[in-house]
Amino acid sequence: MVFVNFYLYGIKEIAALGVIQKLLIVFLSIFKMKRVCHLALVRKNLLAHSPFVQPLDKMVLRAGSFIILRRHFLAKLVVTFLALTLFSGCGQDTKAPLSLDKRELPKSPETQSQQRLRINQNVIREISFDDIVFDMAEDTTFSRDLLPERVTSLVGQHIRIRGYILPSFQQTGLTQFVLVRDNMECCFGPGAALYDCIVVKMLPGRTAEFSIRPVAVTGTFGIKELKGPDGNHLAVYSLTGESVR
Picture 1 (cartoon, helix red, strand yellow):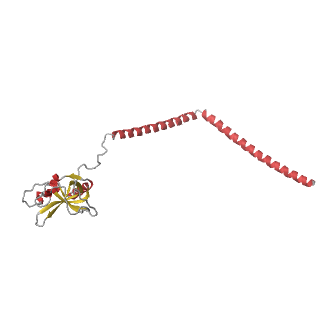
Picture 2 (tube, one colour):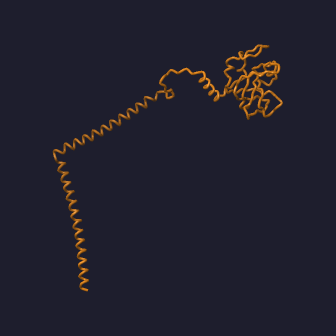
Picture 3 (cartoon, rainbow, N blue to C red):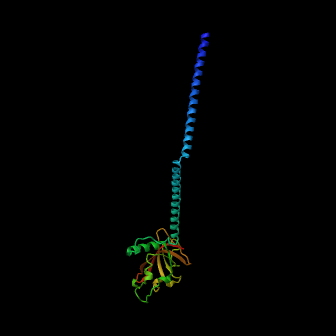
């Protein structure tokens, strides 16, 4: 029993010595850190009051101030340049086309016809029967040379013209009809003026309904001679109809 007590006492003594050793190591580390901090503070004070260090500090401060002023100057210069650029462009026409050469190259006839076709497809031109009148004496055979330029220039154009549908046996689902200037019988047939009627042929899948009221027909204008059994002309104008209202 005495041996056991002595053994336990020895273990406790060894543990206490280990704790004391660790505490001494901690205290020594703290002391070293305080000493290092103290030496750094003393060195800083010495450098601050040294006659050789003060001019160096002033040079560093001056260099820093110069760099800051230079950055401010460059920033102001950039802002001024951008402002002048914006204000100088305010009075200019933004819609003016940019080109290296102001001289325009002559357009070929094919290019002009393509441009004219695009314009005609997008714009519907309103005309009347007065716009397609031409001079033709009585008992004169029709010739295309009789047509003025204002008429021939309409060929292939998208137009809308108002008139009357010439009565026929069919009243609904008309795929082809004659559009005349007025509802008098003198506008189509022998003795009638060729410029007072237009033969309308509707596009595939589209039809028209007969009406005693005037209608507006939209389509593509053309010149196509229609002759009767005797060889005389009945009509010279044609229209590929798109809509009848």
